[in-house]
Length: 480
Image 1 (cartoon, rainbow, N blue to C red):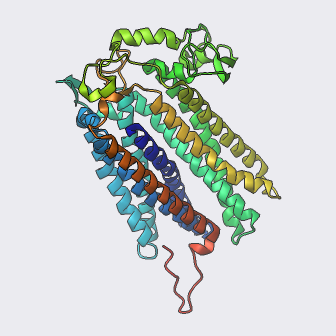
Image 2: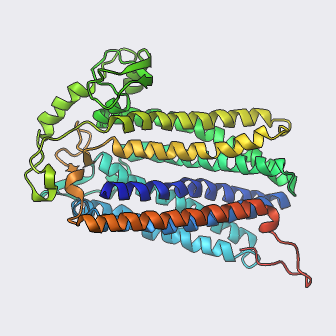
Image 3: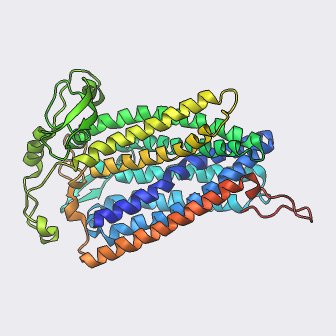
């Protein structure tokens, strides 16, 4: 139940995160274009997309605060284990990134017509860059759980010796650009879908929607290209650092040389022997994805399990905190349907979004397609990068089970540091966890209604909703 609680709240929170990360920088670019050209089109774009950014940012803050509180609520043993390491990046995220982000966002909101234009623009760049920095610190913390570095192991706990090693962890350096590219893919698709709908409805200020549509298509196409490159780098690191995760992603039960890439599996992938699974495969592609050649060996689950048992043990420690698992055999195989299909859904939804982005870029090179199919398809495409991001994180987190802190199978990191997920939970009662699970899920459901209502309201309101007409005394109504 503790895992369900963290999973539900984290996946919901991460629906806000990529849109905020991507849209914040795009709004700063729009405002820069306005300051440089004084073209009212760019001012309208800044105001409209900035309004949607603010709604999403507020919801992201509300839902994100719970994430760090959950470490103490349901994962106190985990907090004690990683506290010396996580304290630094989480403090940097809170003090350096989030406070800067919030301060300059506040100045940006209330500084229209009060601050000089260039100072106001600097506020936009400050909060947008702080948003990127915030992502870096969080990803560095998460990457340490995937690949512990920069510590010494003393008295059964890791002690931080180099925050620089944590921030420059090769796992973090691969995950950060991949995550940021995913955020821009979300923001670009968001711009395309809403702009296409307004053009279909023939809303006022057509030049605003055409400009946003073109901007969004280019952002999305470039982001998806970066996603493919960084995803390849990240995948090769996973083959090296977490071979079981990548074998599970392919439902690769038996070692192959060369190894084929499974495009689609038919049958029951729940069993680690894959006796009833038939796959449509691309020969030798998995060997290339793993090691950059077409002939190398890739170990399967059945051969990896004995290696894990030899290095990390066959049974859980005898510990009352483990409950029914105390002293029981360890299952080193992740939940295969989740990892296998999560990996494919991540790639599949990303490919659909990228394909529509390329199609939109081609179709709108001279004029926007007429008819209802294009705006409806553009609106539907907004969901695809959100889903790709969510399934990507589910695969990343579920694929490392049964570890919450993954051991290093090679000398690239500190050896002997790991923690089982079963050891990480708080000594809470079933009633306590169930109460918080239900309460947080219902609260997040209510917040989802608020988010959808506000986004829908201001999307439909268009430019008039953020740049109202002048009042009778000649002043502008307060837009925010």
